[in-house]
Image 1 (spheres, helix red, strand yellow):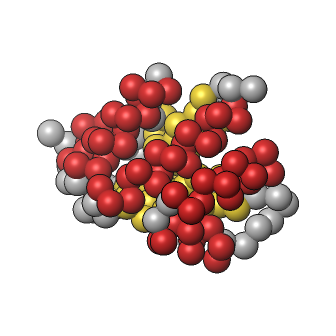
Image 2 (cartoon, helix red, strand yellow):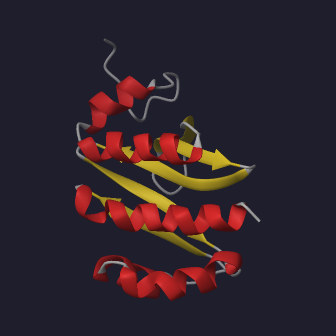
Amino acid sequence: MTVWDKMDRSLKPSFEMVTDFVKNPVWDELTGYIAAEYGVGPVFEYSGCVWPGWNAKFRKAGRSLCTIYPFEGYLWVLVVIGQKEKEQFETEMPLMSEYLQNLYLETEEGMGQRWLKIELEDMDGLDDVKRCLTIRRGILKK
């Protein structure tokens, strides 16, 4: 198998390459959940912004559900909470971990959005991410 370098623009990764790179079951669990629940798979894109390198974007109904930034051993998951999601998110916030509550409160709002950059090293934060996606998707269904 080809060894994948996340910073190599010329080699678009396969799902298996990213799985081998991350080496963390949270990647499999989250991407499997998104596929089963929302019927979408990752679209790999190279980015030079937030975290340079390849990332996995998940879109449904023409809007972003989330973007996953793979790293060796862990992930960052970017979920945007916009004006439409804000009320629902804040209503459900007490059900979320202290980590995510603090992250939300500390993330500056810009143009009516908070870009939550959620670090996932293990399964502990997975329920929070799933809840965020459910809120995001609930708005998309309307």
